[in-house]
Image (tube, rainbow, N blue to C red; front, side, top):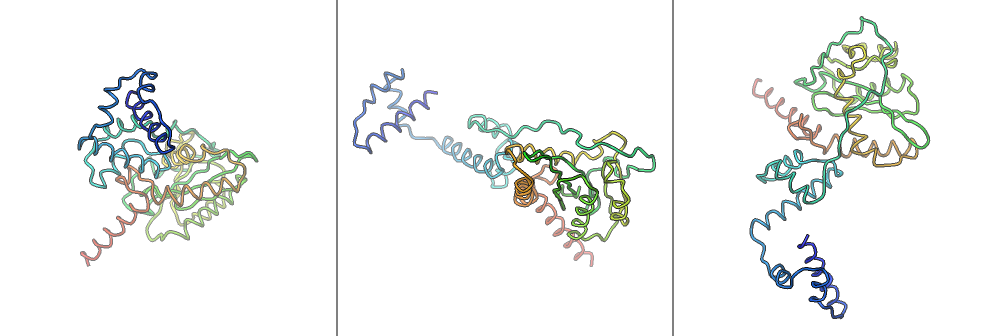
Length: 304
């Protein structure tokens, strides 16, 4: 608190000098109840190497925090700092963040946004909460979430590759028609190379049990969450919570057009390309897949 007072007095004194005005430093110090000797000692203080390093680290923390759209907490910021060669603990980063008055966006537990419509025992849970496949295009998962706008709700359909947690396709619509899910699946199939068995997992919502959906996924193994148990689709449900908490909830969204622009910006310019994930060894989904492809290609060359 005292240092903040000293800093304010110093800034006011400097501003007055530049303007050609005289100010009484002693008067300000007396009015604010701080000693002249303390102020002079602070004014002529030479920062130690430790203080200089602390200041530099805090500047890096602020840059990383801002670059993450002010979302990252201590674990991810510490991971990013270590990539630059800094030796620092999460606890220290957390302490600095509190001193700087910044913090991660808090994530409340995600809630169910779709309801099961088919309780048939014929719908099997092939995935069975095995959320860590060993290659891309082994398991996709899909879900629909609602997004509030002033004009009314719009609906985001997403498909995630569980290997990298990358959103490989998404569609924003003004209705909950099955065609929106089909469009998203067709985008995913066009963007990815499927040359091995693929599981596609979803809840039991009407869109995912429709005949059109079954036709679009006829060459895939369809897997369904257990009845009234959304945790079987936890990864994609969690993503929909994250995009709202980290980005969409900051805005009073007017309409479909603005919602689309915000989702595009978050997904294509941040989530897939820059946002690091603990699941991906603190890499972005794109980088995690590139590392896999590089190591896989190298292994094939050595084997051949």
